Image (spheres, rainbow, N blue to C red):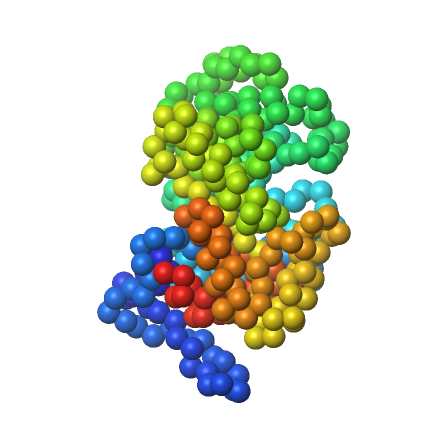
Length: 348
């Protein structure tokens, strides 16, 4: 059972490696009387999102069921509305996942909410939170200078203000007030009814990304948690954590109620060189030739991956979002099994 998870069958399980050296490894779950993992760092896993040759419904359902069996705390997706990678839209995919799961938390990191209409986005988030019976986590960010703001009718000069005001309007829409009144710079709402409300009160947990100091100040002021981007290095994440913790103290917020996590792109292979090749191929499927992306992943043998993840924990991560970058559900399922069997037990 992964730390922070809840066993779905009222019987704690742990994953064991039944293979022998030189033989093909098989990973199976067997019952145990006590959880093998401690109560420290929590582990979530990425939900496969590619749709190259048709949606693998059966494969995804099996993947989600297995993630729950293994005890992962949550499953997360990303948003990439414009891009060459055929990634399914995040909230719509999470709505599907809600119907396939019972206790797995469902997250998206991050929604570039400056590119969305706040009331429509608030309604979509509410729908997924209700469909999942209160299991949604929502990551938000304003986006950066390279975003195609014009394609969404957003002024690049004011996108930060647009983002902040939009989040405030969404929180107003989620409030207990049956009618919303909000007079802002970009939106004017006067006594409009907004129903239904999210299950989680006052709203689903809001996770922020970002690395710039101003972005991290904004994360503490408006958010409930911080998630370091998968496209950031462990070193840059460590610097961000220091700023977040200092800002929590400065703003008088309880650090025990503000989770710090990081998405980690990774790949395990018994051949470290092959693991490196596989992880870089996977990252290029998502990011293309983005500069600096080669420096961010963790890859190698199980021991190599343990070392890389331990460095992220030492940098301040309280939640690890483990993100294999396979081409399909089957490849990511194989990686999830190996993470549970060969990596996570060494981290707790």
